[in-house]
Structure formats: C-alpha cells, structure tokens
Image (cartoon, rainbow, N blue to C red; front, side, top):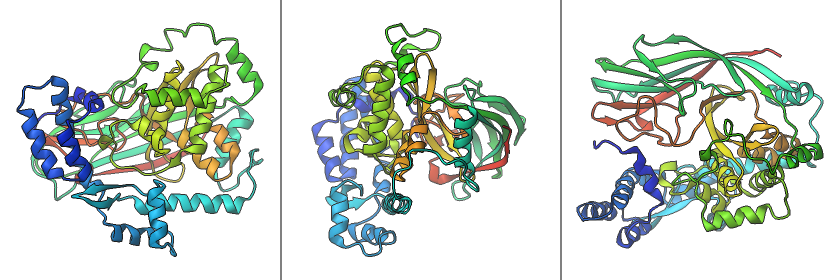
Amino acid sequence: MEPFRYNDLEALSTALPTDIESRKEFGDFDGEARLIERWLQKDISENLKAKLRVEREILKRLPSDYPYSFEEAYERAKTVIKDLTPEQFRELQDKGRIDWIYVNGKEHFIHSTAGTLRNDVEHAARKEKGGALRTEAPESAPGNTFWQSLIDMKKNGSDSWRFRIRFTLRVDDDAFRPGKIKVYIPVVCACSYVSDIKILETSSDHYILADENAPQRTICYEEDIRENHDFFVEYEYTVKSVYHDLWTEEAVSANRAEMNKPYPAEEVKPEDLAEQQPHIRFTPFMKDLALKITEGCETPLEKARAIYEYITTQVTYSFVRSYFTIENLGEYAAMNRKGDCGLQALMFITLCRCLGIPARWESGNEFYEGDPGSHDWAMVYLAPFGWLYVDPSYGGGAFRSGDVWRQRHFFGNLDPFRLPSNPQFQKQLTPPMTYFRDDPYDNQAGEIEYEDGSLTGDQFTSTRKLTLSEHLS
C-alpha cells in the first residue's frame, strides 16, 4: 500500500478531468480507475496529481456504499413503511430522501436506505403523538435522565456528572496477521466543560498519549503483534455543562454592545474565521445562502441564531455515504438540505464564517441512550459570552419531535453526556499515521495500521462501554 499524503485531502476541491468525471457519473469505476492511472503518468500539476490520488482512494469505498438494486432497496424500505408502493418509493427518491448513484449505468441505492426512512417515520410519529409544539420545558422528566439534565441545567445554571469510559479496539480475526501494528484509540480531550481527566488502565505500558489539547486526542499502542488480542484504555473525567439562554432580548443587547470590538486574539484564532479546504469553503452558493438566511439580522448572535434555526427546520437528518467520498461536506448539506450530524455542523460553521462569525468543530461520542456512539457538533464565538456550543442535529431532531424548548437548548448549550476527543477537524493523529485513515477527518471509533498498510472500519471492531455514570450536582 502506498503511503498517504495527508495534505492531498485539500485537493478534493479540484475538479476531475472530463473523461474521468464522465466515467464516474456513469458508474464505470473500473474505467475511471484505468484513466486515473493514465493521467498520473502525464506531466500534470501536483495539485491534480493529489486530486487523482485521493480519487483513487474514493473508488475503493464509493461502490460499497451503494450495494442495493432498486428491487433490493425497495424491499428494505418496506420493512419501515409496510404499505409503500414502488411509485411512492420513486417519489421519496426524487425528493432526495433515498440516496442513489449509477453503477455501470444502473441505479444503486445507499446501504442506509431503511435507516433514513425509519428516522423520518419515528419523528413523524413522535410529533403526531405529542400534538402541539412544546415551547416550555416540563417541570421534571421522571425516568428520562437526558431530559431531566436539560431541565436541571436551565433551573440551576449547570449540571455536573462523572463518567468512566472503557474503549477497546481489536483486529477482526479474518483480517489479523502477525506483524508490526499501531492502534489509535480516542481519549477525552481538555475543553471548557471537561476537567479532572484520569487514565485508569491501559492494555500495555508501552504507548504514546497525545496531549490533552491535541487536535485529535488518542492513545497509540505500537507492538510487534504475534497473537490477536484487545487493545484498550479506561479513563474517567468530569463534565460540567453550563447553561446559556441566547433567546432573550438581554442576550441580543449584550452582543450588540460588543459587536464592533475586535475579537480577543487569545480566544479567536485566524483559522476560526477562515476557509479550510475542501469542506469549509466560501463558495458563491454558501455566501449567498448566508446572506439570505440572515437578512434583517443585525448582531452576530441574531445571525448565528438564524443560521441555526434554518438548519434545524429546513435540513433533514439523513445518513450519508462515507464522508471521504463527498467533495464538500458543508455545501452538500446546504445544497441538498439533508445530512447527518457532521454535515450539519460543517454547514453551520461554514455559513457563520462566511459572515465573519468565528466558528469551530468539535466531535467525539455521545451516550445519553447507553454506551457511547459517534457524534459531531459545533462551536460559535459570541461576545461577551465567549465560545458557546451548538448542536444542529440534536436541535433539528427536537424540532421535528415538536419540542421547541429542546431545539432552543442546543443553540448555546450541549448536554453533559459527551465524550469530546476532537476539538479540530481534519487534523493528523499523534503520531501521524503512515497510510490512509478509515476516517481522515476526525477520530471517533479508532484507527489501526500495519507496517505495510491500514485497516478499514470493517476489518476491526471498536467497542465503547460506559462503566460509570455518576450525577454530581
């Protein structure tokens, strides 16, 4: 396997040569791969070479993301919507709710067809059951720890918890072979709401632990492995989620008083306002959309809030293909009005930065319904409050369920049930991997590579267990 040049990712914003693009649109991936190798032998720019090297990696993933024929996808859709007709399936396809591409000139549908429709149906059922929109939080939520925490945050100003996580990676038996191996496991990072981080147990004494402020924090084990075994780390940390109400006129007035002052250099960095190729781009479409959404808004707070309201009410949560196969994640969500948590976060970040409002990425895991699962969210800088958290996908889910109070909560706040490990997007691990990562943009499930190549996510198992959840106050 050829070593991967990490900065090649930036070349995703470069267009493909027409003959290669034509093969790709038709779904002739073998033909596309053949043309890529021919082009790489030509005297072309380094930028185009980088684009073609990245495209070659995309080809290893894209077809497997769309495994189903029309008949197969339709049958899977019927497991969610029992009386769905072929005509109704086509209508959902035309509306963009069912993703598809051409493979050798025939329609092939995404592996998450049923999951996306199930999400639609469940939201519709919850909203119908709930009746009118609920703008005020209930006094309490017996039996619902997640809701109760949000209620406590607003009542008391904050909510604090102590968590213990055991994170395990293991090479699948059919992918295992003896050899030199590096295993990267996500570790909680330092941030405004996390404190008292303690590493409790490791599977080996030989490891590299990234700094608490690393852009994507991991513990890395390096070993000449002879027999397959688990690699793990267990750690504890405390979360204190502080509540901010950004929906009052007082908040707007406070922000208005600060809006003409320069951002403090120690808090806002140039990269918090800049493009980041290829997924945070100030394209004409994104700049125009940002202006349209915020028309009539005066302060940065009102503009950021308008962007959040637009995403949570107009962009539908949808499972998507591998991030690496999408050339501009933020614009993809904005253009198609659909996307998962990461795409919605990048859309929010891009639109804010288009307007000169500082915004950042953060991701890791969430675990309000059990063991941790991958999740992404965003941050926005609003004076005089500083850096605040924004979770568009949680806000959108709350809105579609009829809970306006929860939708408003996730503009300026998170919940405590988070495991942040990636305070930056599209950054190297510690130490950098040699080969292509399973997820080159952040690290939520871990990575493994041998001396001669890396493993994909279907070649290793990532297990995340919540072993302590203690409410402190």
